[in-house]
Image (cartoon, rainbow, N blue to C red; front, side, top):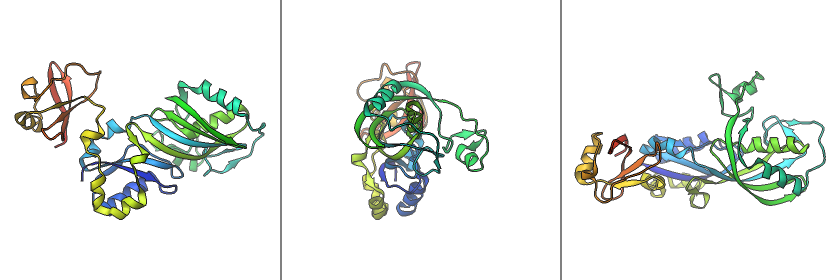
Length: 296
């Protein structure tokens, strides 16, 4: 069972819980996910099954889009609705114009402080473990980007926005920081991930449906070649397939069709067989394609 599986995660289970449940019902032991969703968050969770776990690094760095609901009026210890309420002086609920202006000023790249209750590693320990023990946490700023935002409405202290963000962006931190900027503490009330790179929630299976399918969920897997369709590709000759499977570099004589001539720095090239299946990922060096990850 090899490929990428898109799951619509409900509120409640952790991302690890979803992985464990799919391992149990599918019979496939090698399953991972390409980016954690908090337990309360819902929406798109990208799972990699079988040999697809070996392309994890190419799937975890994608930009993400979210539908977020932010509540103004008080902060919480976890920066979301699951945490203990922190009562502090609060100004009036910000106006739509003030919130829009604050979001506009957040656009682009900036340094973001992750939540204390997060999976960030601090001196070899998870930040949330230190936070639960009430130990000091020296969190480092992360360089992230708010690429776009869309206004979805305001109902009293609740504000709904759509967000397009870089990998590693914490929407909980955005909610917390907006509250501090606008003089009215805030936290993330609800979050739903709608996109991760090329993957869209519209094509995801609800978790309950995926569990019901069991091993038949294999019919819903996205092939690795398609999951990495944003990478350049060449098609191998039969002899080229043999050489690549043995880890040997290849030149144009082992390609059926056009040779790849220019790629971005450090960009991987897909090596496909005659049927379009992904055989390996390669680097272009010295006019040769050098397999870096052999997958079939």
